[in-house]
Length: 425
Image (tube, rainbow, N blue to C red; front, side, top):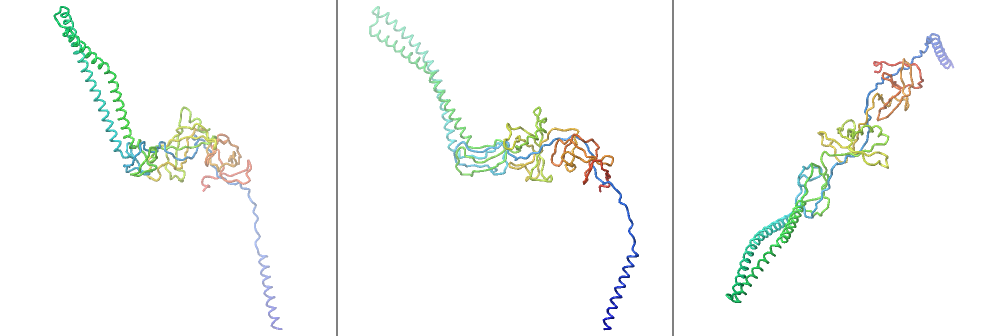
């Protein structure tokens, strides 16, 4: 019992001491000082509005295609016996290079035979010309002979009338006269046939020349030459393979002659209208669409032509851009057919236009301006939104301060504080 009372007394003492300390702390506490809240206007960052002259660029995408591509095929059948060492995919070829050739031995023999036929026809003409000269001389001799036999016949007739010549002599004179007359007639007939015979010989010569030209043409068609400096796109033939006329053996395209077909939405044509006046051709800058961050080279170009009809499915205007050339050191960044590119077409210029980032717009046509430390909610005239920028022609003046800081609960005319440039840090 005494032990229990002792423990109870200790607990009571501790509780009384704790209550005394707590009371002392409560009584001795400092009272908080009251401070009134000051009504401070929100601070905002601003950018000045600056007008300028800007090109209305139109953006489009397309795939690079060769301007001149040729499918190679033989016009004569035969077995391939020669292929140019550089005729392989991706290799460059020079103008005039013989790319493919078939076995030409039969064609060479045909050409030689045609040449022989031409030479023979020419020799026949020369022979006939000499024969014509000989007939001309024979005609003179035959006429002289006819005159002599006619005189002899007259003399014998006179002698026979005076009975100084026998009937046999008269018959012989008449026979000689008729024979001379017949000889002259034969020579004259042969001479008359010379023009017709000459026409036949010349026809034979023309036919021989045609056969020679055909043989030479077939010999020429037995090989394929490059008509331009180009690049081999595909190769579909090997040495020893037999090919037929019209069979595609490969495809080449002209080097540094590339185009890209783009399609411009009809609503974007308003920015290009004045550029096409007086046969103008809008300038274009091209980059590889898959390379971001400025890693792609920039190729110059221009709109070469506008297609004849609008695409009915996409309601866009097709145009063909002719790509210029630049010096690209990295061979992997060279433009090739099939590359997807981004084209920026330079449109007409607009003056006195404000170009601001889209992030400054508070609504499609509203800006927050700072004037004399007050907020002005201003309606503006937006003529275009392109990429991350907005082009404005009305509602702004040069020097206006456009607020870029967020303003929750903004009210027209509310007080604001414009931060200085050092405060923007």
